[in-house]
Amino acid sequence: MRFGPFVLCPKNQEIWKLGVRLKLRRQPMAVLQILLENSGEVVTREELQKQLWPSDTFVDFEHGLNTAVKELRGVLGDSATEPRYIETLPRVGYRMMVAAEVVPEEEKRSSGPVPMAEGPAETEANAETRTQTGSALAQSLLDRRLFRRLLLAGMAVILAALGYAGYRRWAGAPEAPGAATSGKIMLAVIPFENLTGDSGQDYFSDGLTDEMIAQLGWLDPQRLGVIAGPPVSLTKSGSDAGQIGKQLGAQYVLQGSVRRDAEKVRVTAKLIQTRDQTHVWSKEYDRDMSNLLALQSEIAREIAGEIRLTLGEGGKGAASATLSSKEVEAYDLYLRGRYFWNKRTVEGFRRAAEYFQEAVEKDPSYARAYAGLADCYTLMSSYAIAPASETMPKARAASKRALELDERLAEAHTSAALVAEIYDWDWKKAEAEFRRSIELNPNYATAHHWYAEYLAWQGRYDEAFREIELARQLDPLSLIIRTDRGVFHYFAHRYDEAIAELQEVVEMEPDFPRAPMLALALAQKGRYPEALEIVEKHARSDYSSWTEVLRAYLNGRAGNQKLAEEALAKLRRLRAVTAYQLAVAEMGAGDREKAIAQLEQALADRSISMDVHVDPIFDVLRGDERFQKIEKGMGLR
Image (tube, rainbow, N blue to C red; front, side):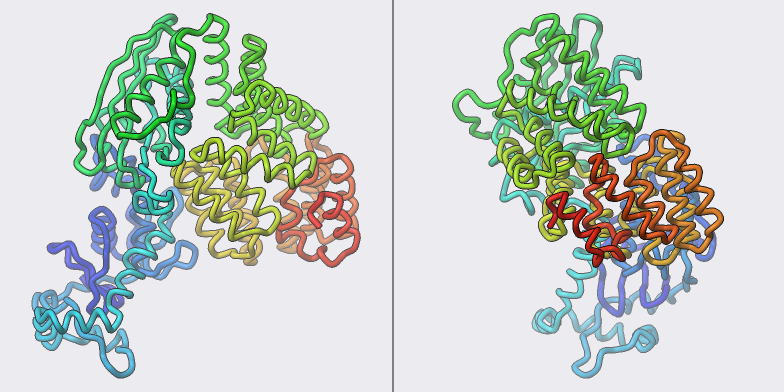
């Protein structure tokens, strides 16, 4: 089948462009064939799932399809925002925008490579008219010397650019094992499956997975990199762990399951080598609930031994053999807190704070619970869920207590760094704390993620993208990390890149709380109707204040003054609204004086966002001395 300058040969599983064979994996090739066979018609996601992702395979349909389409776009040089070939119909499916033509049999045989012209580059039109000549030239490529000359002429460069770099850039796929980890052995930890039959116990299996990642991360961070695998909802016991490992760029995969009752826990774990899917090691553990931390340490050490790491004298992360009943209860409460904290919702944060508080009351010496409490209070302020004056002093106290209890706890240093930058505006201390956290545990994805935010807020984008990439490699499927990578592009005025990245987040999880950041990137391109549509689709009662902020800002920018004023009036009546949010809304309405006044108030009550220094919304104010004074007050000048 021919479409544009491309020829697809389904029988041989090959795709060519102007005589150059492109690199495309089997699954994206199958998606392309289906779309071409239905050119001009919508192929629904359900139809693609039925044909290509049967329910008994390990690959999650949503993630697999999104990845396949991104790879296709990278190879075809297509764009999700301005498509030439593949059109996305959000939540519905895809449509091939160009007609596919059946290629005669003799042209199939001649669709192979051709030598590059010595003169001007061959046009696509000329390329598409080749038939018998192409066949003779293809045969001549059997001559090794001619093939070498073609490589020297640049064929390999083209192949690399189209088949690999483009895919890596747009698909967001992990680099090859060790590519960005200084030669470390990479281990992917797939979330342990909850086999209790009670979905209310998901927090326990998820929390045990997080604990296992932490234990392994502490063992030998200079030689062992630990990657968070796909969420448990995307995998099943017996999944093709080897393929998961390859996709994540890991040489080894750890997967398992958990059963528990009130007093006992059974953990089944197995270590699989990605290269040949060999089961290197597997074991079943039956323990009392009081021995959980010892159990995690034991599994981590056995795995480390199997992959022949040197753990050092006694190793790190060792746990006491037995915990008291209060410590077990505190640990269980901590796991519940992290489970709800990761939801990034208003209700999630509130419930998380309750669980973390209960945990420290049960065990006042539990440093990680204090760090969790600090993180919870800080994000409640950042998400405008509660006033900074109410939550941030609590966050500072909790992070300080965590450090007093365990100075070597990476989470505690990350919590302290976040408080220092967001509330104290002590940028020097914040950077020192982030660096200390990463030094203690280079495998802690959140430390790299929040340090990347710190760098982006100062306009240090090259460093920020390096750190967010490290975070992504450690937690490849994290929606918040993927979202913030798109936000960094937005801050850097790379709007097309921001839109492409954030659009992928929306497709993966339409209800993700930060998804409406896509609307701001669209607004900077003047695409106001699309931006407003995004806001309306993602309007949630949880975030009613931000919904009204965006309605006011976008309608004001679009010239819909009446609608902007209505949103502003509603916003002013809300109890949970900050001066910073009102400043954003006033910018949309075009009232710079009121915006400056609100920013000054936000500075005074410390509710101002660190985004102010780089957010394009405020670009028109940067020459104003009052705005510069605000930035100086935050230590950003």
